[in-house]
Length: 282
Ligand SMILES: [Mn+2]
Image 1: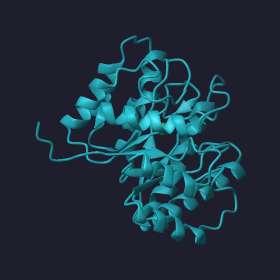
Image 2: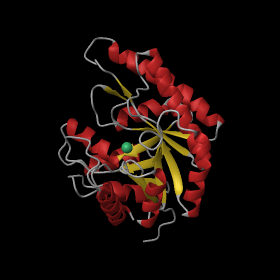
Image 3: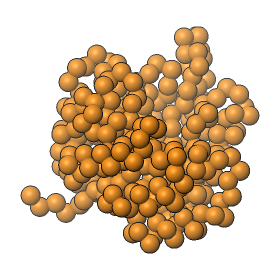
Image 4: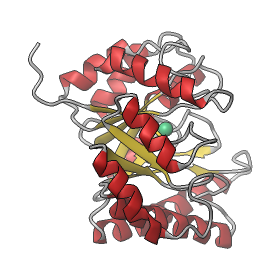
């Protein structure tokens, strides 16, 4: 088969919780990653992190020929918070993440969904949606001024999250000039299972196809349809083949990031995760 456009396979720094960011980058390069996603949050980038240290990290990335994306801060934050101070802190952290992306030579910043603590209360989810829209608009203008693209991520279909499914995210970005999508396959599987679907592979592939116009970034990880486990592909019950076929069919040529989580054994998660990702998508 002749493929003109090729995706770049890589690893998120997420699993490397016991290593420095430099060690995480070196380990990723050693495993054959073509790109890395830097999670601009703890443990590697604590509050008050001095962004003037980023050029050294860029140099390391360049030395290994790694492309880079940045996952904006998200731990303990909420872009739809009803607390003005937390909303503003989240905005400040995403702005810092955008600056970090630029300093590292990246083009894409992944931004999370908003959380609604009591969605069952009448009118409360509407407030969440309003605040999330306001948040993203502010981030978009900030990112555009700096030549960085925001890629909003689909969630797992939870009722207390907005936007919560790939479909809802598609509608959200359709109305926003410059907003793009990170398609997270693990989250899409959870959303399909929550909607009562057993075999989700074809539905996930249809979502990718439906969002292709906005799709610029992909996250890959596995789960059993219950929890957001972030396992290596093959360790859960996702059928990745339809998604892989669709990404090839639409000539997806962006980054494909294995986003893993296994604090008990990060090196093993990274090794197995990128190998399986390569087997399926390479
Ligand atoms: Mn993700």
